Image (tube, rainbow, N blue to C red; front, side, top):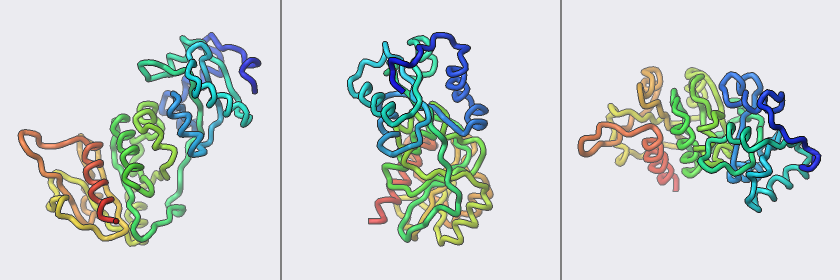
Amino acid sequence: MHEGKDQLIVHQHDPRYSLLRSLQSASGRLRSGKYIIEGIRHVARAIEQRAPIELLFVAPSVLSNPFGKKLARRIRQSQVPSIRLSPQLYRQLSLAAEPQGIGAVLRQQWFALSELKVARNSLWLAIESVDQPGNLGTILRTAEAAGVSGVLLLDAISDPWEPACVRASMGSLFSQKLTRCEIMEFTSWARRSGSTLVASSPRGLVDYSSFRSRWPAALLIGGERYGLSDQLLDAADFNLRIPMRGGCDSINAAVASGVLLFSLSSQRS
């Protein structure tokens, strides 16, 4: 579909635009199994990782970057449907301070537990109740940087497809294997695969800096408000703490994930 043949959408009640707006809500994403990305970097990473793009949308008067225009042409040439939006409608979809004029709708990709192949020295990440999208996106970005093999979401709250999470992930979302499962399913999977469960807790008995893991391993991270549930803390083989200095008594989940993921990752070499 060529840009010149796409009718410019200027009314917010247009059904094609209503679809885009629906993906800003959790119910819309759950119902459709799709999500929205926006910005040149995110679209470029989606193409690089061969993520399943189902629709391209652009605001021609906003899209001035030559590389962004090249991306749009490349997607159209692959026969992906496209639509053109007025600047006003496009800005309603964007979280960026300076919108770049290009975005896409993608199909969510989930993996079943049975599809996860656990290598001998692999590192996994299990997340429970991290409900702040920005923190969750940062954790996903950090997980990619630390070489995590996959991310398991152990609740119905953590939403990796939420727009703020997608944006904070900076494209790392497209390269991760994501699984959602119950805690009992996860612990059974970990036992079958021989994975060591390493929990993060302010009340942990082991200082993370002195800990040496057995492999494969899975790091368990909980939300800022309540941390990990007792069920997961009891299931863990080790409960690690990050000692605090000064008057601070804790750090947020994203920072704790970074400290522990890189500490564990460095042991694998």
